[in-house]
Length: 314
Image (tube, rainbow, N blue to C red; front, side, top):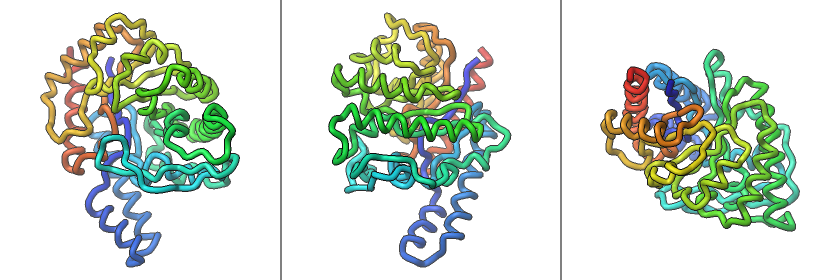
């Protein structure tokens, strides 16, 4: 049985983009903005449901980038300068750690809309502690390891809150791990040992880079599932790997507007599954779909639904 899901932020529809701009310019109010955010999130949730998605996300339409909400959820962090998000034409505000961090009293429900998915299996997506630390400016902690450790404890706290809200799967995005130094991998592993105490299924999602150099380290991380970007990796690297975990197969290209043939995706997923015999295979994009126009992202969702049907009919 194959299951399908989205693996990151979804692009905003044009109407929501327009309302957000009006809000930024003081031409509309918070109430109208939130009403549009809720409506757009509901439409995305329904799109996933209609296409047979097994695990649903809210699309994070109110997240300006992967880190910005945590400047609100955690004291001791500020949003810094605009920085290019890897090799994409999108940007994030680099977090600046100004002081020892602690959890604020801001409710996580401000950013994770469990209320819109009350009766379905749902997933929340957050930055992994290594990538969070790696892309931050550290002005408070004596070492990188100390920063990762504190971020891991804080993310674990948020994880417990999300689990209490009924989130079944928690995904931690770790694109920076693809270029991590060997000595840093142990630091990242210790971070996930802290996070793994949650009762949810923990996904470590890699993308934007090859994991061939670190795959033997990753399979020893205390996580339930590892996400692999098959557009950044030759899947032959999996042939001699003792995977022993669930796999999130990133086989739909989130950075290319071309709609792949469903049959080609089915062949790819089948080959990966046969090669490593993972416990369970999740099928989805290799990264966020926010890099695509909204209409193209919708078609990618439809493609994933078609792939699911074809895989499970085999």
